[in-house]
Image (tube, rainbow, N blue to C red; front, side, top):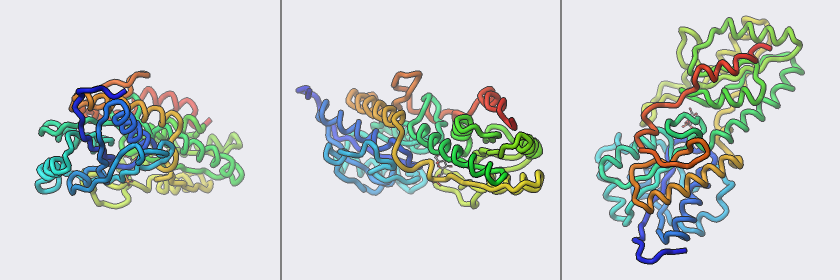
Length: 350
Ligand code: F6P
């Protein structure tokens, strides 16, 4: 029910950084509750921070969010634009918000997008943050939507790879996403029964990995090795796709799987191949878990905006959706604790 005497706000919504399944579910929940319960108006900013920076927007009402719940990606588009790396970026954002009569922003993103949101809030912009990333590496929230979908995609791939690896007596190395945090590798590897899982959090000994692989062959099974893109060998470095940095200073990773397969083939004498899952992990329809999480985060985000509780990020803690200071989200990256890795190690090589 709409309440009388409530101040109607015009709220901008944007999605920044790498897309992930569930973004549209957040947008839908924000708009559906925002319009129906509070009577607020919305504007969709396009392509992350590029939208408010360049005044690129599109209408965002109930009609625009119909049917988007199961759709992957984001109807608003995304980018890795960093307004703090652009001359007068903050002033331009403030001017464009004022020109479009926008009172507040709901920013849906990972550490980079929310890092910008935190700074903008400190500079007087009304912002609410919603955490997203397939990597599940944001602090202050137990889970980010997109992660469950990515894990299920990777698990299904591993299930399929077991049978072909066994048929050809090959090692199959599966490279999954995860720059600094190995949550996808850990969960997909555990769920898919991988024989070795390698994470960015702990450097690996390639001879030990070759030992696990040989042991698995002795059991008449073919080994599946899951490696996060950011994993590194002892005394080694991350394998980069190229040296270029994006506007948040990130390198593009890729190649550890191929490197490892070559090493394992040379050390074991058994053929080793690589599968790089890449953006398949980010595409397509979200799982039920991610749809529900994204929807609940969206509902809490519009409540926070309606109450003027600026500078907050909505988060999942246990089974509750809570609000935490935006700065907490990016204060520390949530990596895999070594005791969690030890749980997976029980199954290595067997
Ligand atoms: O942060 C999400 C993520 O998918 C990472 O796992 C990966 O390293 C990165 O984005 C890839 O980004 P891009 O699609 O821009 O290459």
